[in-house]
Image: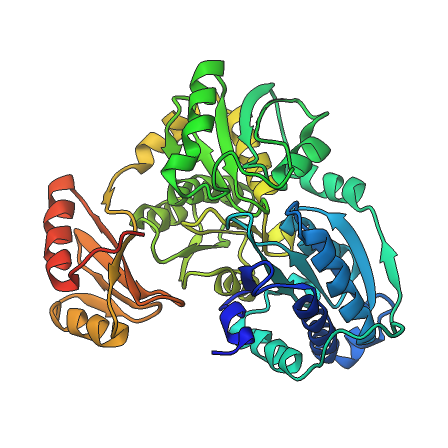
Length: 460
């Protein structure tokens, strides 16, 4: 396995800073991405004055600045002009690419990983995601042919730009607050610590901040999907009698919600709730959801007059489905929420703003809004150690010949009262099981049946 094979993943470039991710690699990624992204523009797009720009942002990790500097030099050496937007959340880079009409953007971040990690999230024109099948493999190939970072002059210009005022105006379009709210925000010592004050400080919201310092240390792992990492925000919501709470991940593109009782709300329930909100003003529109979500999501979309679109897991698939179907909104179980009026991109800030608007405009509390949605019983995602993943999925599918089966992402088998999906991990010898049933007992019985076929559970 080459150094590039280790760090080029399905959707981004990521690894341990020093041995895997360093300034030399950053320069090569910048040069390769600049070359590739310019080549993807149509003749008309290339003719636009601003399209010869590439946006770079970075998170708060101690090595992000030096990596961003090398990345910028690499971009400029391949021809495009580079706009450095500084230390920002990842959705700000998506905004900047669209706001400036740039040919693409790169955020230096390792998202929810521990501080020793870093990497690069790449997007193209109109902030379209760049993954393995949409350009990351080509960028990897170009980067692998380059020699060490040279010290010669750049071809493109380099300019720093402060886009916070424009970004703030954009996000606040989603805010409607008839009454004042008190909200706990756990920024996970990540980019939410800069984004939340910059956007919401003067709005009609009382923010109770947790872990807003950005000194390269984490009070807890910056991954809100792990229940252990939600302890602080849950306690603070209960103690301070807040309307609700949120926990953001390291680069603030994902958001998990806590109700006023201090209980976490599953992200598919939030997708169902947000779908109803957006369909009020956009009747008949499509709403995208990932196939691990509860069937309540599709039911709520239909009952609100929308068209449900079940999609593969992953931001590249979600964004494409939303754009292709001209949908109004999309949500994933991972805490990514996508918005038509945000260039079909995900945003923790806009998810927060929209939920605040929903709660402020109603007499019901978040737990009361979610309660009617809790109609089914889910296993949560469970990992199993499997070497031959494809063979095991085919074997299990054959055990349920009377099911409604599809292979959209792994294998999904559906019955009137229950369903399950089994997907392969992109990077590890693991299969991931999600199962849902009408009653708790049925869920446990079916889970036991599947566990007998899948074998050993993984520790992670």
